[in-house]
Image (cartoon, rainbow, N blue to C red; front, side, top):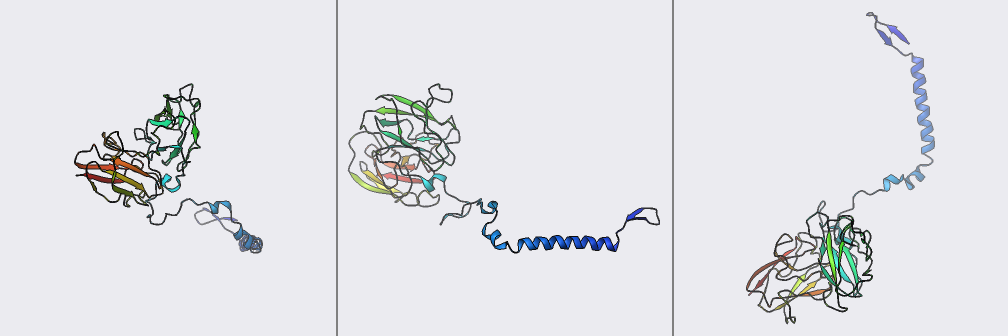
Length: 304
């Protein structure tokens, strides 16, 4: 009810009866709620709302501090079928101007298959053609979306002939472009052929060993052993990848080095595989090198 005070201002009051009635209603509502919740508590706990099962953050892998993380593809890079040519979509390739496909301008033997492995943290494609405006885009091959950490299905170069150069690009990031050159059947040039540096010719006799240890892909871990590696001019360095993901040994200080790969480049070395670096045409001196898949992996080759 409403009354007026001595200043003639309205004051709203309630009676004890109305207050008691309100409290009674509140008690009844709480009692009804309890009567429903208590008998069904076990079922409610057993089957919680779906939203409570959503996990928004993956736990950090063992040995990696929180916030550091692993590059996406290092966790789940799949195996490439035996005999297939592997091309890696490099980490960071979604940034325009960064290296994208490795090897770039690859040579593929006639009738062989090609598999693209996405080592970046975002989806990509490998689609034949010069770009989205190409009317023949995707007619020779199109991997479709390759999610981060996954690989494409093996691709055959439909209708390709020896000597053909096939341009391709990423439909998600059209500035990512590369090409394939079809070589004679059985010709060298696939990612699985041992790569040498320092010029052509017969491989030199192995004179030193370089190991990419397990866990090298985790930034801060040892990348190459031994480092630095000292060899005599003319020695061939046998490189063994003991990690669980692909790596390279590429001369230069990093992807931004204009001379990158000019002295030697193993190209992609699959997990458990080996490659060779030939020093026959290298003068005495120090040669920095890095991994083109994980550019923070650095080492030095010293030729005496």
